[in-house]
Structure formats: structure tokens, C-alpha cells
Image (cartoon, rainbow, N blue to C red; front, top):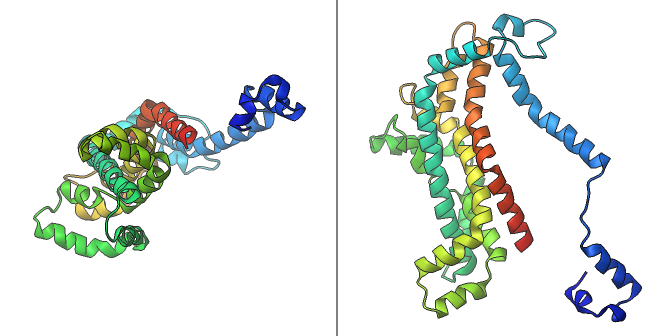
Length: 297
């Protein structure tokens, strides 16, 4: 329904237009099929997490039996304590929070600034630079492991957290993601109006760009935090067990002649809990930001 149809007087509306205007304010309701499909998807999504919790509450001998356990046992807290002590998860949790938090803040900040520059600023070779930025996403990260490690070793940063943080301060995906969002969500007229009013570039970014980009920044922040928290390849190469992140620390639980699967599952559960807590605390704001961006778009 168009705006002109809403502004027409009631007598000038056709029967079809009247039906569309009357139905414009109605709220859509989900039917039984929708609830059934959503319930199935929710159960399938929660199944791995529930199985991890069940396995973490059992003994290794019980997990090896057939059929496997389908309900919780009584060894959850003892297995969690064993995993916490064996892997040194106290230090690892602090390190992962520092690494993931720093990477998230820097990626969101720099990607938003770069995305704004590519979306609304005019400068020479902008298209070529954007093409090169997107092209780096096609390079497998495994190819950069050896030169990156040699570089960090020359800087004297071996087994230090900055070795993991520095290569991930900004990503090509984040830059391209923010650029694509700001092209549609930020009107060029709004930026020009701010310049006419005498606003500096810093003030335009703070008062115009950041408010318009807030929904996409929330989504990018969540994706970046999850990726940085779960990253394993580069941290296992750059760090050791004396100064690990969570994923590096959990790797030590799988060593030994006969690894204890219940303790490994308990460690995996501990490593997943911060992500669940972060989503429970900020999930409403993130979903609200996504919906706000969808309505504006």
C-alpha cells in the first residue's frame, strides 16, 4: 500500500483500496505450522549443547557404554572442577576476554570508519582499494601463518597476547560489511548537511555515522567476538600452555594415553558459557538493532 492511498479521503477510495487500508493496521499472527517449525529448529539447535552438558555430567566409562546416556548424571560439578584445574582455565578465561574484547572493539571501530570512507567519501583509487580489500578474503589464512610467525618473532612477541591481537585488529569482512550497510542506511544528503553546518569530520563520524551504523555495528561486534573467542589455529601456534586462551587451554584436556571424554566435554561447556552469557545480556539489544536497521532500510 502506497502513501497516496492512505492520504485519499474515504469516499475517494476504491473497494480494493478500502480493504488494503483496513488491513494495514492488523497484526500478523503465527499459526501452528510456524510454531512447529520453530520448535523443531530450536530443538535441533540446542541438541549439541544439551548433549555436551549430559556428557559432562557423566563418567568416561558410562559414555563408552551402549546405549549412551540421555539424561544428566551426578558428576557435573566434579568434572567441571577437574577441567578447570587441569587446563588452567582461570588464566585462559582472562586472556580470552582481553583478546576477544580488544579485537571486537578495534574491528567494529576501524571497520566502521573504513566502511564510511568507502561508502560516502570520494577519493582516488577508492574502487581499486575496495577491490583489494575484498580480494584478501580469498587468501587462505593458512598461507599467512609462517610469515606472520616470523614477523612476531622478530618483534619479540612470542607467547604474548599481542601476537594474537595485532593481526586481527581489523578485517576485510568487517570493512565490506559496514560499507554495504552504510551505502543504504546513511543518506549522503545528511553528511553534506552536516558539512554545511560546519561540522568537522570527527563530529560527523560521532554524531552522524555512528548512530546510523549502530545496528550493523552490533551485529559485527557479536560475530567478531564469537570468531575471536573460538579461534584456534593461530593461537595454538603463537601461544603456549603458560599463557593460553581458552581454546589453547582446552587442547591440553585431549592429551594423554586415554583422554577422559567427560572432562573434555566439561571443559567445552565451560568454554561455551561466556558466549551464552554474552548473548543473554546483549541479545535483546542486538536483535533490536537488527530490526531497527531493517525498518530504516
